[in-house]
Image 1 (cartoon, rainbow, N blue to C red):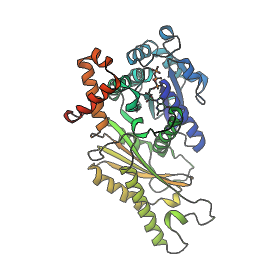
Image 2 (image 1 turned 60 degrees about the vertical axis):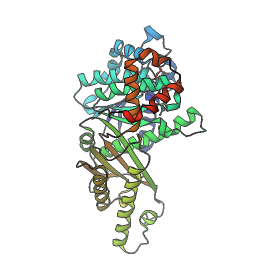
Image 3 (image 1 turned 30 degrees about the horizontal axis):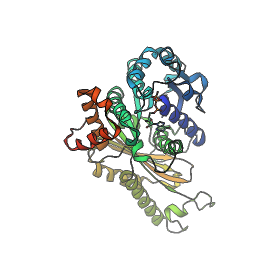
Length: 392
Ligand SMILES: Nc1nc2c(ncn2[C@@H]2O[C@H](COP(=O)(O)OP(=O)(O)OP(=O)(O)O)[C@@H](O)[C@H]2O)c(=O)[nH]1
């Protein structure tokens, strides 16, 4: 499907920038327009791919291009004050060619965390197409103020968007890596997962169309109903170089028995689906209780078969308990077969329960909480974990 992506704050801008690069590399055609909004001039200058005219500096009168320093109330205020500047950039997008907006932001800082919900609310008032959020949760080692920002922003953001897709840095940060180097890798993981998912609905006319290609309405239907979404992913390399013998590794094709090859393909697809659903999700959670799901199987069409996808889909129905599990192909000439699973409306998410508790504590006693040390706040969150009610 075609998206208008708006990156709010540094993390948001960098991830949208990376999506453009992904689009270029893979020809997936999902980014119809890309805009970056920030209160820090240096962050906007540091982007590689987003066109200069689509980089919007807000809050100049208040913070003079220096950012809001993790103050997300100030982030929200400058977004409100300068929303017309953002709208000017959006006005240059042919929105009639766009299936949805995707507002991307880190939830732990000030600009994106405060501004993204403001922008989502604004977009929903003006446009009829869906407005989705991609929210990045901070690592728990980043400190109390980042957790507090994320807790408050999350609650607002999920309310303002049609669906909030979440990626939790905390589960993805590798130890021993520099923060920047770590984000490079993490951002690649983000665009790969969401790129395959959204790209699935973008198999256009004249392209190779398999038996059951996913279209953008299936993605929209899976996301409709709101709530929080997470994505599972697993892939396996396949050999595309052997002329005429494309199937060799993935299917175990020896040029012989076709039924056997089909059975191998089916089995491999089923185990990829399990790996994707039970492995590391962008937001770790219990998959049981998921309201809706979409399974996308991507790869060279020779490696995809309807039976495998159907079996994977059925298995997902059983595991999630959902009656609304969609599934289909995304034929791509890439040397890998990948399963991407969108789990929409997830309910049992420990990280969100912890964040919710932080938000409740903050409401009760905002001054004390802000003075707490990082360690104290972390302890507080851990201790109260058992008593929490789910957020939604
Ligand atoms: N995945 C990912 N997360 C990032 C990246 N950069 C920052 N973050 C996360 O996003 C959170 C918010 O940081 P920023 O995006 O830098 O903050 P901002 O919205 O620009 O706000 P201010 O800097 O306070 O004005 C951080 O706490 C990190 O968890 C990135 O490149 N990738």
